[in-house]
Length: 218
Image 1 (cartoon, helix red, strand yellow):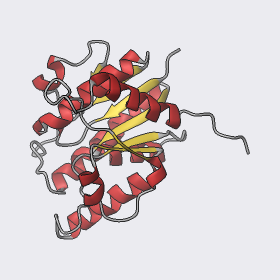
Image 2: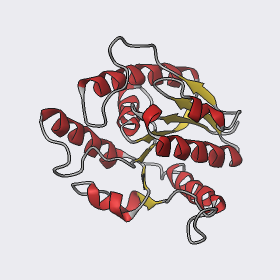
Image 3: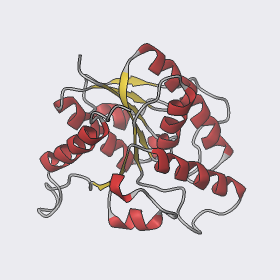
């Protein structure tokens, strides 16, 4: 049976066209590798479903009163949404044998929580495009808590995907550089020097080959 992947979108995915397009490209690349793909989002977004691979299954969370449209900055609404996504992800993991979790932005924190909150340990990919941990960008206790959780997710991730060097520089603290891959968006149709989709798909495949490599027995 092909390995199954659970993609965990961010709590703000519905307001982030870049993340939506990136998820669409990632799902297509994973499906071309023969992997089964599920996508967990806070709610259905027409832009996401418009060109998403029809073989991918989309799961949402129950509607939480007063939690719609969380802000870009760390907030109580984002935290509550992430907690509900965590419980939904645990329920999905109990029904399907996922080989890898793949979290986008603060979805990586949810992937980390699923890994910690279940009996089984999951390798997970943390893909960050809009870091919570940018030094001095967000201030206050909620921002500090968000940075702490993000750093924990990055430290324990089996692999980290960033789109460019600028994002790497924005993330404060030390990253496990051996696990970091810089994979830009595939825009060769716009810029001849940009990644083609084939190069993007190959880079994603290399990351997953690394994450799923056989580990030495103790």
